Image 1 (cartoon, rainbow, N blue to C red):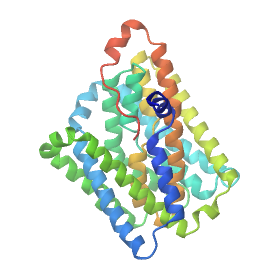
Image 2: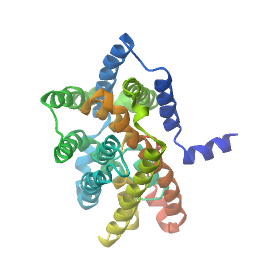
Image 3: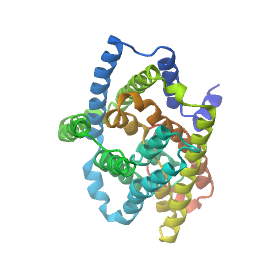
Length: 341
């Protein structure tokens, strides 16, 4: 039985299963009236707590120490915050033939998000790549993403004929930036405790995100979210996500090879430069977009997250199988983390 469960975990993120179950719950029993008001307040608190913990756990010292690998980090940065957003803008050309306007906006939002931390490091380690570089690059992506993602979304919305209101900017500062900076400030006192209680914090992280998902989809269900989608829309979204990930994987693999990076560095670039963070994306969407639209906007991210995990799990094992024996020991210096965020 354990062998079967381990096999399932290699291809299916059980956290995604929990999120899908939450979506089903919200679809059958959405929060209404006073319940909806309660979840609105609870969501605001959960988002602030999430970004406080992100700030408290991210080591800015690690980013400073990684400056000597600036070429590698620059390539990952350009993949995450330049190549992806350009592809996100290009996806708007698929409206209305393949994507609905809301789903296309969700794809564009997904493309503006930072990379993951846990899964980038985990897959780099499994593939016997440069784990130290992956840690720095993924951490830096999350650190800078707190500031860059809202700006990118604002720029892309402006290009698409939308924009941010002053109240949205204030929400970003109050719910994202201030808690994050407070976490960075508090890190010197609580960093050690956080490091020794990762499992508890993981439950807090995931529980908070499940709360945000429930609130978002409850609002969407009340506003008729599922009446706006068809099976054709879902197939189109699946195809777009697969093509999007394939383009980035091929580009980062080919580009890093052409730029002369070592095999270990190329692996770190591929896995760090192709990820999008569900953990950052869901709470950010709740802050950046109107409540009634959040459900549809995070749907592309949820689907992309599962596709990237399944694809990269296979890719990491292929890299590991083809690794030269002498390189195995130094490359796998880090411990694989759980590939879930």
